[in-house]
Amino acid sequence: MTEAPLESARRIAPLAAALAEQIERDRALPAELIGELREAGMFHLCLPRSRGGPEAGAAEFFEVLETLGRGDGATGWCAMVASTSSLLGAYLEPGQADAIFDGGRSIAAGVFAPRGRATRADHGFTVDGRWAFVSGIGHSDWVLAGCIVHGGDGPELLPGGRPDVRLMAMPAGEVEVIDTWSVAGLCGTGSHDVATGARAVPAARGVSLFSDRPREPGALYAFPLFGLLALGISAVAMGIARGALEELIALAAGKRPAPGTRSPAERATIQTEVARAEAALRAARALALEQIGAAWGAAEAGRALTDELRLGLRLASTHATETAAAVATAAYRAGGAGAIYSASPLQRRLRDANVATQHMMVAPATWELTGRLLLGQPTDTSQL
Image 1 (spheres, rainbow, N blue to C red):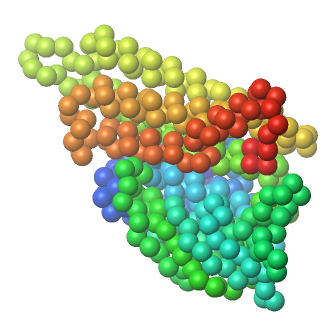
Image 2 (image 1 turned 180 degrees about the vertical axis):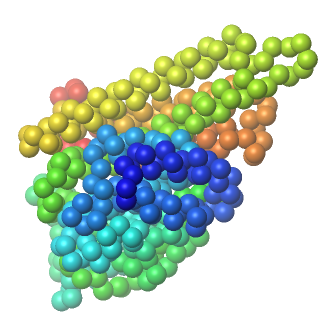
Image 3 (image 1 turned 90 degrees about the vertical axis):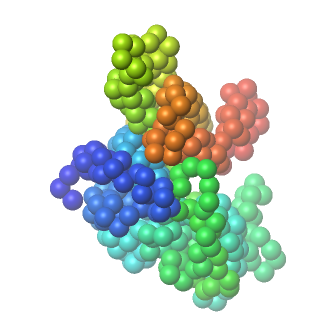
């Protein structure tokens, strides 16, 4: 790769925008776009340099996904899921990391939700389960599936009583893909279910994000893991909203209902909506980058990543995602009757942005989690 990741994202985003209708119709990214994204490292932003990845900084990670989402929400989302999955390259033994990620050529689709069971066995683990929301499974080479670890006496518990959850790596061609992805938005992510029954997985292909520690020393791997995932979701949502606002501005400037009438851009109501949306996006983005900067500074300096820093990341991420949905909704409403047609990007961005708010990392429950901390209440911060 000769380009910086953000330069690559800026080059690829217009292609994603041009293919957006096809992506939604096919419920998958087209081969030409996948090739561009793979070649540019967009599926491996978090893969260590030692394993052939770009090992992007947290702010760069945010801006790259925001840029791709600005082109097309599903494209940004698939890059986000694969890139956060590539983070496991910092945890796995080098040989296993190379076997799974192949120096940035193999793509992994990951789902952390522990909907599977990993039972200890002589060979490592026996894995079975069914997992939903496996984004990008159609173009992925590997699946990283969350499992609750079971020993001879039932689930294995960590200190504090929480079950241990391990991400188990399995070749994508060896799991069943179940076509479930008929949804309101982010259709092109192809986030189908996958399932497997009683499959042997070597112990070296499992990672616990609670009890294991990264082997790599970089700041990216000291950065709060769940905060990074939440930021990725919010970055894509912010890009979707920015794209919606740009669509509205272009529509308002070029549309004149009848000779002698004012264009939408000349109307006070549209001017007000655009200004409010612009302010909201800038404010949400500034908060996100401010919190990223504070946490990244601590990670680079080797300081403790305190609950206060983790809290800031989660607040900023949920706020940015909700703001993005509100902006996309406002742009759709301001777009008038033409926005209701399937050919209008405004209705697609409305749906994509609102679907992003449903992810557990930025869902309303995160307000409760962060609110408890702000109020000084006893709180489990293991997934902060």
